[in-house]
Length: 153
Image (cartoon, rainbow, N blue to C red; front, side, top):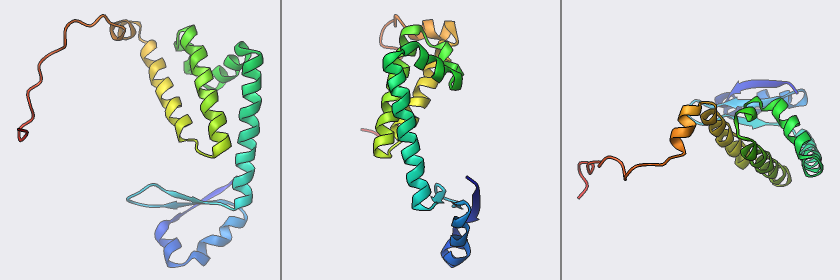
């Protein structure tokens, strides 16, 4: 689907300048001091949600019946999965699929996005054997003493 961008102020001054664009495209309203907003027709939004729900459920069925295949499918898109140890790779696939299915059912995809970022960061750590070894411990003592911030009593 095509997108067209407008300054948010343009929409506020005259929605009639922006709304006809929705016939052919989704609209991104660009805001300077906050997140951008997206306008789209409800029919396109509902089609996207329904498609996501079907794709998420189909992938979940594949994962239940053939975990290796589901891992292979996700690894095709998420190349960083190869850096995770095998046990964590399977846990990652299960967790991401769980968040994806829940998000497809509820429309709330931020938990999936957060989990994706978290797992990618974990994979990056595992890609550096020395850092991974260091972060697994053992840890000696409580660490250095940190002085109390000024102004606290």
